[in-house]
Length: 293
Image: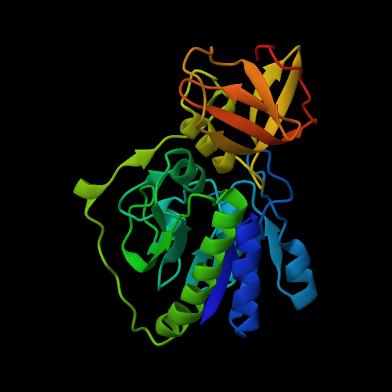
């Protein structure tokens, strides 16, 4: 089974390496040399070079040049794992087995952008690792493989990213032989059960101390590495917040945004309710007690 692989993020790298460890017949790789929109960007051309696999920098995956390059490889299936642009009909119709995509959410719920981040920011207790056959919609095609992933209250983006990746690699090892045997499931999605998460912008990462402590804590863990980090501005500087802890024992007559004490030299900031302790910031933030953020 001839495979063309499309991807340009950290997960793409793990998935491609998994396929190669299975001796899968990867005949071409489409990737990006750089990506201003993916903080976990990975250029896969080095893997291609090590394994003698032709690579294409596909800034426009739907262009005639990209289509011709992929067509020449004669793929039976295309795997598109970690790509931020929609694929058009001409490309989707190219391989006989279709194009398999990946979405770290419990489709048909939670289609759309930034699914791992939104799951943490919204405080969800569970997400999923889902492989599906791509169509012209966004994350709307038939499901090939889906596994639930529990979200622990202490999980941050790196931990959840790793948990999803670990489960997804097991799924790849299971469904690739099924695709090769032309004996695989296709479960249609019920669009009545779907919702679509929107694209996040810089303003979504700005901490508003009027938010609840839990909401701020979830925002921080959702945007932690490999993502860009939650932030607040102080005296003209942007302070990234990488790790927090909710503090419940707080007087109700303290205004949001006030640093009202230090716990082991770490600032504790009043929120809309309760407070958060800033455990890890960049640059290191050492305010005096009594200031307002």
